[in-house]
Every structure is written in C-alpha cells, then in structure tokens.
Length: 226
Length: 153
Image 1 (cartoon, chains in turn green, brown):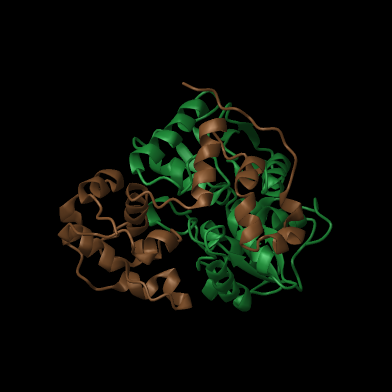
Image 2 (image 1 turned 135 degrees about the vertical axis):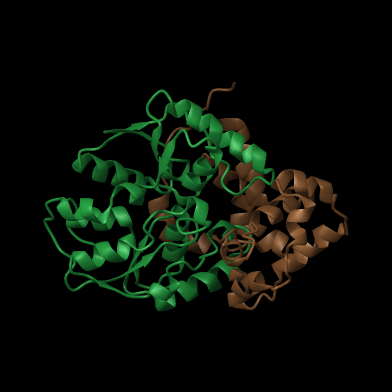
C-alpha cells in the first residue's frame, strides 16, 4: 500500500533519526512511503490565526493528492494540524501508531524480545489531546512493550507536558517540567515527538531517550541494541 | 499596558462571545494546567472571562508561557480550546518571542523551518541565555543539509 508521507520540518533536521526510523520500519513491513512533493511547514503552534494555520496545512493536503489521500505524519504536531485542516474528511491522516496496530505488530516475525527491559512510553501532549485529533489506541505502546516481554513503568506521566515548545522562551520552566517526567520514568523512555526527545535528552542524567521506531526496529532485529 | 481588541480574538480563534458565556467558572482548567504543576499559579479561566467582558490585557503570564498541552481543553466541560485563544491573544498583542520571530522568518524565506537558519537567527539568545552548555548533548541534532525552497503560489 502506498502512503503519502509528510515528514515535517524537524524530521529533515534535528529529528532525522525519526525520519530514518519511520522509513525503515515501513519498508521492512512492506508499506511504501512516498514523500509529498514540495510540502510546506504546517505552522506548528506559532500562529494565532486559526484559519491561517488551516490554510497552510490545506496546501499540503492538496499537494498530497498527487500521491495518495492516505497521509502518514509522524510528528504529533504536524499530524494534528493536518487532521484539523481536512474539514470534509476526504483524507485519512494517520500517525504511524494508527497504522502499526498491535495485531499487525504481533503478526510480524520478531527477532528479539524486550525481556528484562523496563520501559516508559512517554506520549506527551498532542498524540492524546485534543480528543478529535488523538490517536485511536491510547495504550498501544504499553501493549507492544508488554506483548514482547518488557515491563512498563511511569504510566502516570505518560501524558504530562515537557514544555518543549517553550524551550527557547524559558528554559527554567522546561527544566522543571522535564524533571517531573524524568523522575517517574524508567531508564528507557520511548518518545514520539522531536521536541520531547530534545528536552528529555537535554535534561536526562543517564536515562536513555528513544524514538518508538528504535524500539520497533530493535524487535525486528534491525537495530543491535536499545 | 495595552488593551486587546477582543473582536479580533474571536476572529482569530474561531470562537464567538457566547462560546465563553457557557464557562461555568469551575476552574478545572487551572487545576490541570501544566504550569501549575511547577507552581506558576496561573488561572486560564481569567482569560476567558476577561475576553467575555471585553477588557483583556496582554500581560497575563499565560500569553508568554502556555505550552499548548491541551490539558485544559481535555478537562473543560465545554472542551474550550484555551491554548488557541491564548495564541490568538499573543498574535494580536504582538508578543512574539525571538524564537517565534526566527520561526516565522524561516517560513517566509524557505516555506519551511530550516533549522540552521533558525539557530543562526537565535544565536545571540543561545549565547546570552546559557543554552551553549547543552550543545554537547545536541550534537546528534545538528546536521548539515541544504534548504529546500517551497514553490510560491
């Protein structure tokens, strides 16, 4: 199946690792991603005029038409903005977690399990809120970790905010918020958002911050260690 | 202090005045607000009520610090999207921070966020405000890639 792929700005730079991971996971699982030609920024949360934000994302939907109406957007913020710009419901805008269901992941030939690993899935804000644009299964990562023999810890902070988008406005606040998350997390933290990755990694003292794609690639045997 | 044109807040956020009249004042938004986890003592409900009364001021701390986590929206009995109301306020009062300015400037030039350009624009902030000490941990985030220029309509 061919999907139109919207990487978004971060995945071209600081979150290159997530981009590479997504392409690899989808490739191994036999799903084809084709990047939307000449896509533009979704506007993130930097614009106050809601109609301006929607029109930025609508341009991307229009550009995606050349590829597919099924769009994969790994960045939680991009995927929210794209979903909200699709007023008529003509497109199906998906976060990778909406495609990689538990049944699907359980059906693939796993080369490694997660026995002995205690992992904290840290969803952050925009995959779970607002409800209109949230992912379908809000416990998917816990289920994946448990199904492959790992243990889950720190569920109480899974939807806390790391303050990421204020990192360059007030780093003290972001430090305090990320410490709340890090304190309750296990040595392995699985994240989904480029900003969560950056903030938690900056303030982590020895805890490992991974993208969810790293975890899946490890299970698939494409990555040597977590 | 600058008074904000509340009509514009409605226009930008897509809300109408009556949408805020249903606010029960339950302040659940304040009880779940991320910033109150770290003792910032903010009350998002103040913003809604003051816009409803037509006399909002742009000095509310949330205008600068709201993280757009949507916990307030998730708990609100009316699912009011307070972060989007705050973003409208911020835009109208032109309270843009250096980061926001660099971000918009990149979109103007490239049509995307080209991170090397944003870092360059922010370099004095990064130097002055003590971000340099994070650079060793940020090495994996830096990559040399050429910008893409999005075609103009």
